[in-house]
Length: 135
Image (tube, rainbow, N blue to C red; front, top):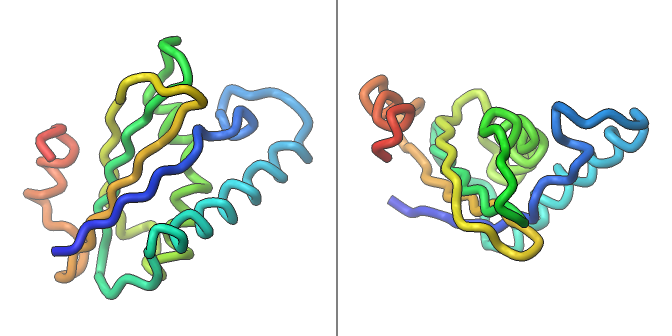
């Protein structure tokens, strides 16, 4: 089974669910995040993937050691995940997503490991493992 890895920049602050600011800035950030992710996938050699579903493991490497809510981090990646869906040709409703915290890095980054499933959606046992943090 082939696995792909792409490193994305730290999500823009406008994409945080807690960000309050001008709506036009949020829309611009959403569009830019999706487009940048598509190009990052292409640069990593990720094009159309012939699979029924994908497992995404998001490892967040924050720019500093400040505390952050994991649910907000995942929510801020929504448009990046849409970009992965566009680059791979697989609808993001068929994704199993796991998230982890990594060590702090200058500027921050998100490392996305993409593993395709050829037999359709991940089965219930695998979903339990992913949710439980085993995988």
